[in-house]
Amino acid sequence: MNMLSNDNNHWLNFIGGEWRDSEDRIQVLDPATNQAFATIASATLADTEDAMRAARDCVKAGLLSRQRPSTRSELMYRIGQEIRNLVEQGAALASRENGKSVNDARSEFEEAARYFEYYAGIADKIEGKSIPLGEDYIDFTVYEPQGISVQIVPWNFPVSICARSLAPALAAGNAVIVKSPELSPLAITLLASACERAGLPKGALSVLAGPGRQIGAALVSHKETNQIVFTGSVPTGQAIMRSAAENAVPCVMELGGKSAAVVFADADLDQLVDSVRWGIFFNAGQVCSAMSRLLVQQDVYDEVVSRVAQLASSLSIGPGNENPDLTPVVSMQQRDTILTICHKALEDGARLVCGGTAVENLPGAFIQPTVFADVKPSMGLFRDEVFGPVIAITPFESEQEAYELANGTDYGLVAGVFTQDISLAMRASQALDAGQVFVNEWFAGGIETPFGGNRLSGYGREKGQEALYSYVRTKNVAIRVTR
Ligand code: NAD
Image 1 (tube, rainbow, N blue to C red):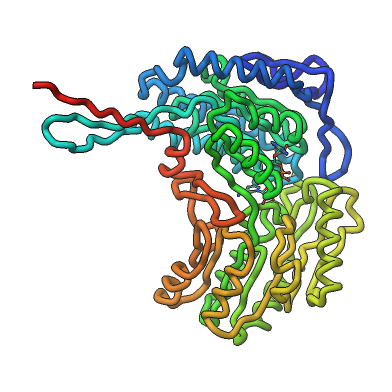
Image 2: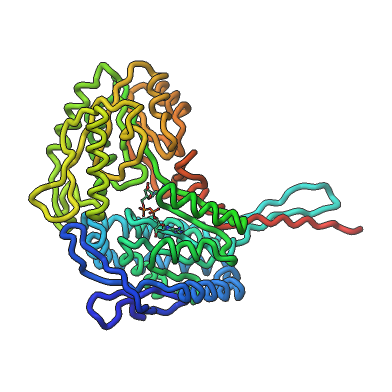
């Protein structure tokens, strides 16, 4: 068991229960300095075949699926415990490779452990139904694992997003092959190490680093893949869905968002500002369910713009190991993409209230917290995902106008409403076209509550008991009783 090779800070892939090197390497950069600090083996196509073979052998032998569910449940609890043992090491690593604060990275590992504990509690409760067909038949349903689940993970929360799909998949008895993100591939390997220490059978998990277009594409298009979970951008999701269609493979698609908070005039503005702080500046805005738009009723518009600007200007900025309010984005390239979007918004006539530039005295991928007001539906900033610490504020007059603005993008991931009026909150929750609606607190919910999108934000739901049903298929058994 050794996920590091003898070379200093060179990490390995986990394939069929073994740690394996490769001739090609991916350099991993610290976004706070833009300096490389580690490398990881870049998997080859032969590695993908070996991972597939190991997964198939595991499925065929029923190494997980034939275990008594209560035994699988105990295994899941052990994995959760092993992840908890790695929290400090993992937090430092995840912060360094991703830029996020050490505190947030610690929470990510704790959340990953919680996923395993939560699904451990369900592994022995995946119960079918008995369906009445009259006295000549006995009919029942059985939930069987899908088989081999290929899971493609993005860089923004690699550890918790990986655990979010891995835990229910294993709990249901599948074998899983994870393709880690190119920019943040290291901390995920600690999850593999936790699984190994906990005694997960060989082949039940492989974790491969490598280029998405080659290694990811080979895995999702593989004839033996039975299910795909993808979290990432819309264009990549669409490419994967096309490839999945060839083999009629079911997918869970967690794609992007351009989510709006609707602020009515009676909202508690202290509560709102606290939500804005987390909604758009947490993880430097690199959150698919970020509060990237704020729709504010005219009566309180100026006050909200000024309070959000005050908030943005008060945030501390620095590298993740200092636990500031705002950390760098994941790469210099991502920083430049975000700055280009800001320039375009200015050209389009949006009012820059604060930010919109890089942070001059810091060498890494830092961006000032950015607030744009008077953003119109015709502007790109209103419709397109930024994936950075940039909020777009738009005024509205009537309730109906607010819903039209909120629903006026191609996405439908999350939405929020801020009001003291419960009937208004209920009407908003019905009118907003999103997979989840937050009332008076952005990100309200937890690993217990289903999460996923509508329209271009994808389909299928992760988290909660509901997620489990993506990792099983239903078999109906109908028996004729002879007399
Ligand atoms: P991305 O689509 O570029 O990459 C995601 C993953 O897909 C990476 O591991 C990449 O290597 C892999 N990949 C790329 N091409 C592939 C292919 N042809 N076949 C298989 N795999 C391939 O996204 P990203 O830049 O890593 O992440 C940011 C995006 O992800 C944002 O748009 C964000 O909204 C979205 N996201 C969504 C959620 C959600 O839960 N809905 C969560 C996090 C991120």
